[in-house]
Length: 513
Image 1: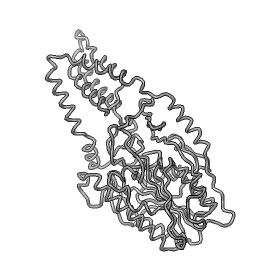
Image 2: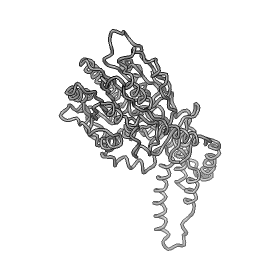
Image 3: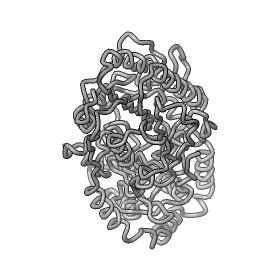
Image 4: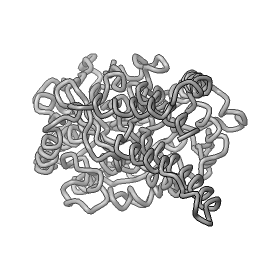
């Protein structure tokens, strides 16, 4: 196989290190293709040899992609067609962080050693021997029964619905403010030393094991906006659901005047249009003539969070007799975002910017809390991230990539804050919800607020609301990849179309504060 031996040696090294999966059958077929010679007696021998070399190069690259943990090539290519191209600076930084110099040095060393010994040792038999180890090593690693358990999970979830019942006494006298935050997980907060930030102590209810299910904005928003129903598959998100599933529809039925606003233009990935249609939202109130604080990875503007929320609040005040509900989406923490005027942002350590941006976001939100409180109005504020930023990667997926929905990316800090409670009742201890939950739990609490206002109770959330909060087993998924938990183990279903057990090194410690 000549130089192709070095290709296989490099891949085998990366496989044994955990950076690649190795499809034994496809790699064996590729080797067979490589060793079959072009008949020398053919008149077009030279032309066919050139064609074979070129075709082999293409096959080698495609097979390398297939064996990697990267998403299917079609999914990766669709990334650039979502409404905006990443800036060249974003691409530069991604490439710099994607390359592991230590592993590159190790691969180069192996190749250099191979070159030194190739005249003494035939490398092809070595490659074949190492390749045969792959199926022997993986024998028995494919778990049985997990597919059946996941199917049972979805069957069970399809029957779960939260119904909003109107209060028998009066219409709601409080607002509901949903703050949907892109790129914030407990693991991200730990990565910058902010997991115990005082901001999270201000919530009356704090979820520490909340699963956002997905690691992308559009499906996350759709899941939240359909929180009344149990967890559906990814594909089902893009089809109409029963009306009872839609959170905003339920709030409208309760008498809330609803609004959809955001701190970006909503163009990338057709976010605004898609979540409006699939989440039954209103036409978005776009940020116009407001201060720009940063630019996203594609060069689009990111507006100041406090300014956008303050604008909505001013509009809300024009209808004081009507209860209001708003869905607000912010991308201030999105990967590739950078401050206005920062030209060489891509050279900075991403954790430095992330900490700055997280502190700015939490500060703006806390300032908005004060604004609402100063008005004298009552409000239930739901702070819920879309997913994490993947600030810290692992051996299977480098930092910044979110195709595989690992729990450290989907386990997000969710908080509920009551503004306007009677201050005479004294301090009310925070309720920490550590059991596994997801969107249905939020819907359940909001529905309970319709029946019994949190401003009329004794202020303690240790009652039936919390005791009967619905739990949700951990299943996370994106378009092509799914992760499920069974016992203490995690299993992945990806482009190989089969379940595999994840190595413990790929599932770092998780948890909230």
